[in-house]
Image (cartoon, rainbow, N blue to C red; front, side):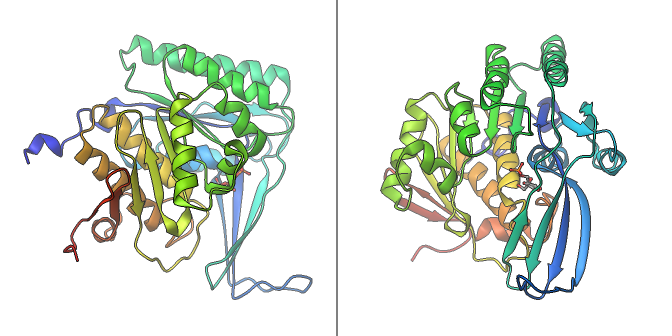
Length: 350
Ligand SMILES: O=P(O)(O)OC[C@H]1O[C@](O)(CO)[C@@H](O)[C@@H]1O
């Protein structure tokens, strides 16, 4: 194998990303021995951090070396909790400010690794704020075009919709990006995902439950999952991912073999940011290696799956600089589904 097989065609520094979080949150992570409903529970630890799907994705991408801009809607009343973190994480803040305080999402994590999420609704966003956000997205794309960064850049739209933003308006944001021939990676759920999928976006990463609604059948077997992925590809999606927790990740793209990655068994501390980490690392791989060979594709998926496994060992998104990442990659197996060709890096075949 030549060295060029390993080196990405574009350094991450040349692949800027705009991460749009329409409904960000402060994540209040509370550690408990175990949670008992209807009684007074005593916390072992607590931690408050700027979060929301697009922000978590942005943190991982920035650590991987991408220039990252954030946008979406941020409450003016508690913005300092976010702006201090953005500066620390090296993220450019292009959030639209709206009246009120950004929601707090509570994550109750038990010693067993089980997490109970209580997510807030979010601030109401009006038409004017949406129009200002659209202008910010247009400006970012204009700037990438002027700097010659197309098509090596992408827009991520991730998370739930705040009150006041409809599914149709989300779909219009996806179209707006696609009309400019910029990649749009969409990560949302329920009716918003269905509306966004109709456009279609460039890439999606639903879990099995989220995609089941669109697929119209439960995705509880490999055959059903593969059918759903093929339908996404036929529908015009270029990167279709299904994340199935410890069962691993499935990845399909037009004209490429469908792959499945299985992470090693992990001691889980918090699964909260595993999906955001997976999306970020996959986007990193695809942006930096647009002409990936079959072997490159396996490496991209292995890295993203291992990083998302790393993410479950602590609260917050995965750390691309973690010293454990190399071993996690060695213990992540990659299977080519079409030809049932199973291969595990670093471990002899049985
Ligand atoms: O926008 P949603 O769907 O409520 O999800 C927000 C939650 O998802 C996460 O980004 C994890 O994926 C949390 O940080 C956040 O609390």
